[in-house]
Image (cartoon, rainbow, N blue to C red; front, top):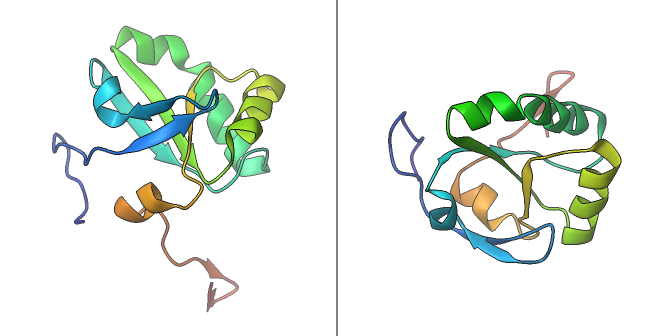
Length: 116
């Protein structure tokens, strides 16, 4: 898949949410969707990102938008993450990273000049 441009239709997918209910992207298209990928629940950077999105919930709502986070974590992990951090974003389970790979969400990382 090529990089998505603004206004381009994103490829559909189906993943389970934190309650284990399967949701497709098409199910959410009654609103604008802010889709973000993150590596792991309950890590410092990912927690801050999810909390920041949650803090802006009413702003997204005013713009008829919802925020959807996708990570390889399980539904149970997402439930705990939502509960511990008082999140109000939708979290989806991409345990095999199929959707992340479809969207080319993760690239090679550089740390101390080395590619990982």
